[in-house]
Amino acid sequence: MKRLTQVAFIISLWATSAFAENYRVPNSVMAQVSSVLGEDMIATQRLPRDTSMQILSQAGVPFVRFTVSDGDIGGAPTDNDPAHGRAFDRPYSERAEVRMDGTLRRNSIYEITFQARFIEGFQGEAETFFQIHTGQKPPLMFFFRDFGRTHLLANLMQGCQRTCGHNDHPDYVRHKTIYPRSRMFERWHEYRLLIDTSNQGRMSIYFNGSALIQDQPVTFPLQHRPYVRLGVYRAGDLAGNATSIVDYGGLDITHIGAAN
Image 1 (cartoon, one colour):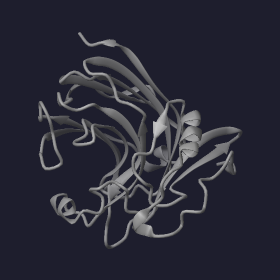
Image 2: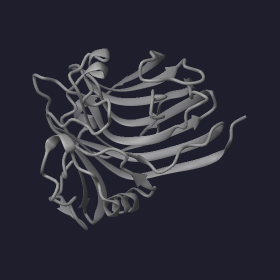
Image 3: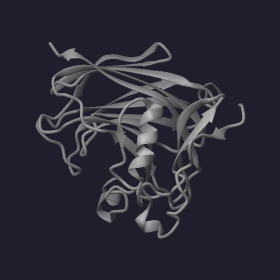
Image 4: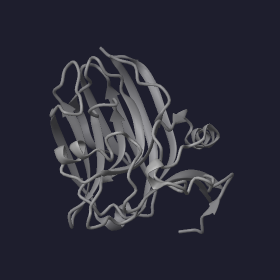
């Protein structure tokens, strides 16, 4: 892999103080991230460190890198909440994510494309690198998992018709595809999603032009507004986690039209 060089900036180094407070991303940084990705993005939660998100370039092409190391507790209220951790059998959650500015329209068809590249880590049981979220339960959690066999895992929510809070337990249907780790790492991959955001919607996911899932049911609760979230989200581990790094290229969120 060619030597990476930084462009524009690496997120400023002034915020290396109290770990618990994490790092508040300046609006100017998010403007740069939005420019690189091609969609307006915001940081609604603090990042674990000032280096959790960086803008880098390779061969003159910029991209956004997310890094989560052991103990990088996220800035969401649930990430270091003991009750929430007990409910999900984890001491805390490690997270470095940003989200689209705004939400997806209800009862609509969307095409979403993005490029992602795994650099290192992602050795845990469930490390999410892309979500369709609602602020409560996410309709889609897209994982990279490694249980000795490397695979992409898309969890699609079913249930919770009107609303779905953190304490609710909807069904998730899992769609797993096996790939050798050597094929996944240090190379760019193209992801394409077709999404119907109706209450009883459908979703298709394509990986480098091949279908992972096609026209599968997914629930978008009536009282929620879905949005795109990307970065790294995973369970903390008191025995220690490996550092995980993922890069993102262009992101395109296209409203195709109303659902039938």
